Image 1 (cartoon, rainbow, N blue to C red):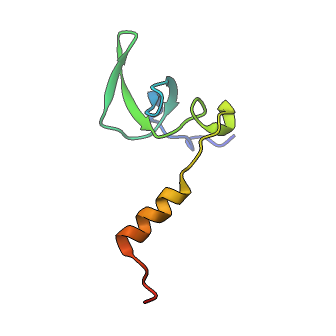
Image 2 (spheres, one colour; image 1 turned 135 degrees about the vertical axis):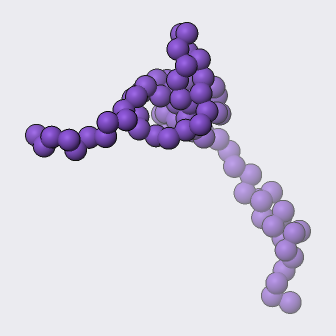
Length: 83
């Protein structure tokens, strides 16, 4: 195995799923300015939009998307440009 190919800045980091509030601690080199206190220890915080705890593939919960409403909203905003 090659020496000195891994970054030296591995450290514990908290990843927080913002859609459901779940958090987990992993090691990472990601740069972040936010911190959070977990079990009496202050750790860097990375905010995620979605993780395996909220992704429909892993949870089995399907979300219905209102595509008709989006089309109507687009047409009301921009109108029919073919005129």
